[in-house]
Length: 268
Image (tube, rainbow, N blue to C red; front, side, top):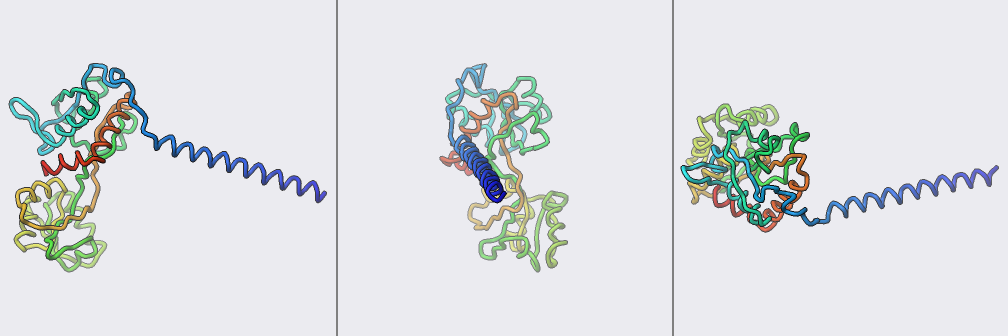
């Protein structure tokens, strides 16, 4: 009986080790499979019309602005850079924001580049690329009196736009840390003015407003700390998986070689 029990125990251990080894091999294979950059499908398959049709709502500066004869902005430059990286001509289709996602379903656009935040409720219809911009809130303080996080705000004054997301964040902080003084203003620019002119210790504004303001005041030295995330990405239909992969790879390479950073620096 002892011999049979030992044999059974050995068999159980052998099976367990075999299953563990197979499982480990599967994990290693999955990691290596997903870490390899694969060549894109033929361009004709990715973009049947011979061009990348990019849906954009050109009414949101500095991401996209329409003039009488052209389009300008961050998203326009990114679209052109993606086309250049894939060696495919691009054509921008300007439309209202409400029609952007429908244009993918109706095959009126191949991709969307229009300051779109990643919306997981659309995961059944849309694939998002890696993020190219974080439009969340930033804490802005003067370099001479920097405040690095929420906890350091206690005992200070915090400026923000009244009624904005920053307003909600500031009031949430007030419930979590020692008191500080709320300084609501009409616009993010006025909130930033109050810090630059010494009327407030810090401002909580969206990163786009901060970038545009600091572009107008290049001599003001500040510390910016990202507080919340609002990620912008390119959207592609779930029915166009190969197209998404090609665009995502192109965008990744543009991020890695600092092309995207240069575009953002040009506009913000």
